[in-house]
Image (cartoon, rainbow, N blue to C red; front, side, top):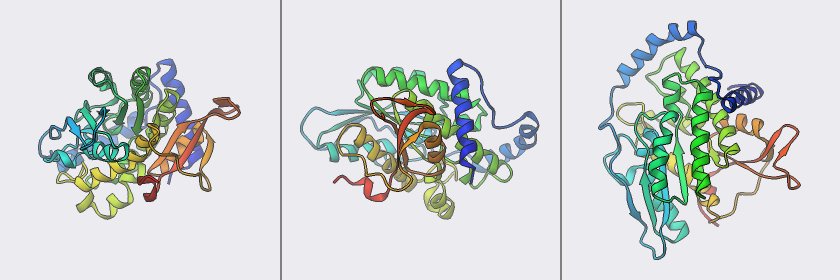
Length: 326
């Protein structure tokens, strides 16, 4: 477990560095990186390659309903395209499209602009394609490749924030699934596993700050790819033991679906429970980085968006019952 106040301070520093265009913090010093790079190469050889280098083609119209289609775009890395799946129905985008169509009782037109292996720096080109679809809602899964390529976190979140702002400028709602906990990947050994877990969660917290400031909302993937993946790796991971199986992709999609529906006003936010509700953005970002399914979105207090310790946000821990409307 990472000490939450420390993650909050790190998220603040990364966000500040991103805002001024600096490289920001790196998770590994030069010495540590030199010691760990060999383990990283071993892990990559063990992981190997999944079946195919992209997910199956899944753009199209989903949901047998009348009315004007809802335009849903998927951006990001291999998680956004369903790398390793052969059936489009098993990809996160199609699962989200079906779920959204059922709630909205309207068809959903899905456009997948994501790309396997993409890091946050590549989101600009993806947004160019996504904007052509005139999106009502955009879902972004990104961060894992920023960790594996040692991209400075401030650089990564700066590109993510720019992508969110561009999508918001055309009226699209934006939901970002933050960086998953790469410490759950079995082929990665210690101490590299501990380092990647630490960096994953620091990046996820910084992503939350950047996304909310840019007008989007986030859903934490942290332990979503954690306890159950660690306990049932044969079921939750695919053949390469790095990317999710169809069940793992389904869990990621259904974690995001409630936030997609709430952002579009299709069902209300859940009632806050203990430890939820109004918080300052840095504390909420650090908390969310530790707990899967946690949503963070901007709010106001007495008409003010910010307080003495930064922007006000609302934090919810999504539960199984929140995946169903009503």
